[in-house]
Image (cartoon, rainbow, N blue to C red; front, side):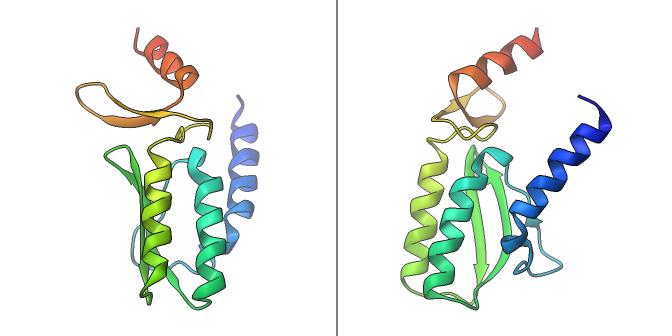
Length: 125
């Protein structure tokens, strides 16, 4: 893949995640979750905006093979939606978004589908 292809793909992702980027608090971790979780994160965002229109994102990321979604200015049911999505991330490939499972290679936890796991193993050989 050429550098211009990578730039183009990243630009499309930034446009897709613009609703998240627009409400991210500067000075925290920002939007840093793997691209395979974009869909479930955007679905979570839609639920949160519906009940907390002014909520702010501090950080999204992967930790121990699962999504972490940190927010400011939220109480109540919003946290249940966040927990539900964090659990979904443990069953969603962090690379491509297909159904996956939590995997431990002895050093790192990741959530990958069988195809992405196979690609990862091939790359290590």
